[in-house]
Length: 94
Image 1 (cartoon, helix red, strand yellow):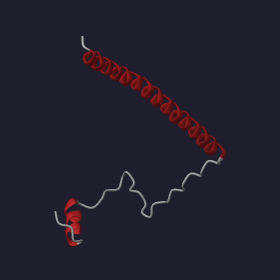
Image 2 (cartoon, one colour):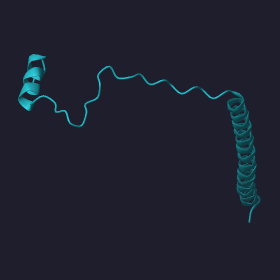
Image 3 (cartoon, one colour):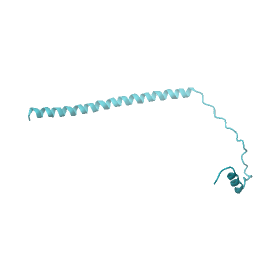
Image 4 (tube, helix red, strand yellow):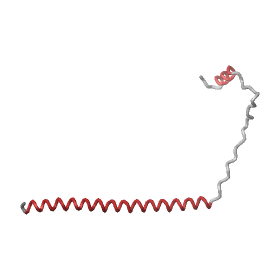
């Protein structure tokens, strides 16, 4: 093996070793960043829950009463022909 071949082989080995080291370092950095984000999310969630627990519960909205009285079970509506005529005269076409 010549000196030039040995130099090339060392360069290839060093390149592979650097790539493996960078991969390990990058994974560690990503794991640290992920842990920081997760911890921050947990802290913000705890603060939000505490703030919501301190606020009084909102009052239930008041339902408006209907202007028309609901039909009773014994009453019938208009005949179908009358209803269709009313719809057509009101501008609705079927």
